[in-house]
Length: 192
Image (tube, rainbow, N blue to C red; front, side):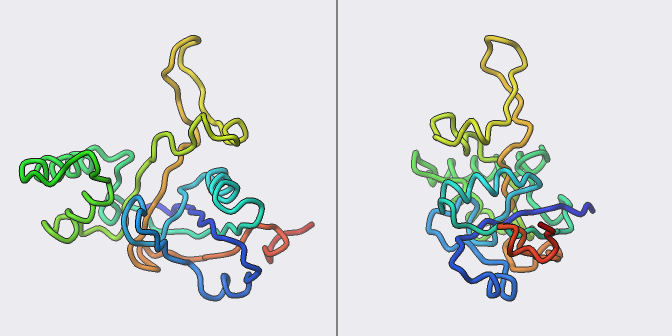
């Protein structure tokens, strides 16, 4: 089990005291990528800033927290090939039942795994949204962490990938030390 640093980006509504007291907050969007839960950016704070700038403009909070990460409790669709095979098997099963079409989302597959066939018993899901920060985004250069392997070729290494973790319950994965860290004036530990 590893201690993992996470970041949650929220709209700054001038309610820093409430965020500190009541956080973390669930994502309640109908189109949330990984289903219902509490969304965090994994390890790289630049992704939390990118989301804040693109979603909320100049008025956003970033809260950090830690979790106890292991692949027994988190379905890891980033680096655990066995979990990718399990996800792929669910897609194949849904295809065999004609439940997949060109509008099928990752969230729908995860929901099927969790509620219909009962194989998603994890506390969280971890995924890398490829092209989350697209080159067509006006803030691309500020948040570009890609290096090519060969000059003139398209293949690249994203060395600060936009990995998200969706924790299904508020304090799943032993989430702890939830703290408002940005803007710095709200961070109790910040020294100007």
